[in-house]
Image (cartoon, rainbow, N blue to C red; front, side, top):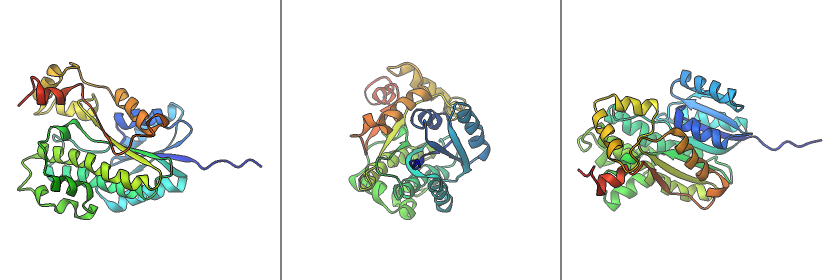
Length: 279
């Protein structure tokens, strides 16, 4: 009698174009669990992935709720071994208040890393989508870096420098959150490594997605178009380009890479610090 190996499960949080692009490259023969705050978004993405030959199930998840994230973990575990996590959920500065950004992008990411770090299979890997914005935040103190990386999840939003009177606006909250994501992944890579698993961040620049289009057509649109025009690449990126890097980091060719952050922004950050975009 043939013994079938356990099902490998890839969890994708955030049903947008970037999460899907990575999932398409790493999920052949595996079961994708696709979670999103809006069930209709998850269902629409599932149809696209299913039509391309992937096994997909969907669920609603709110990454700012521990109960909701735990339910996602239980759902994934019921289907097999969790061998991959792609965390691509988040809100942008034009979409939400600074409080919501900190709750979703900073706390929510730390929560996902903690909960899935408890169940990730040996040999498994994770990707967190951060942002170029984290690289344009001025340097924090060593104490602040350590606090973002290691403060217990439920105490994270109580840090003094994250209080509303210390955070200037939603963009500042976003920059702090994305810097915090890369620092948190560094710390979590140590813990995930004890399970034989890896985790990294990708910090994309302007990638053409619905979220980016919101920014391009919003109050920060002129600034975004200026970033594109004055960047060394001279264009925005595509989800497929992020997917290629994600596949490297989650696959066998990236087996020596963990706790790292990959900035891919067409040189916008380089131009910000050393070129025509300098403030």
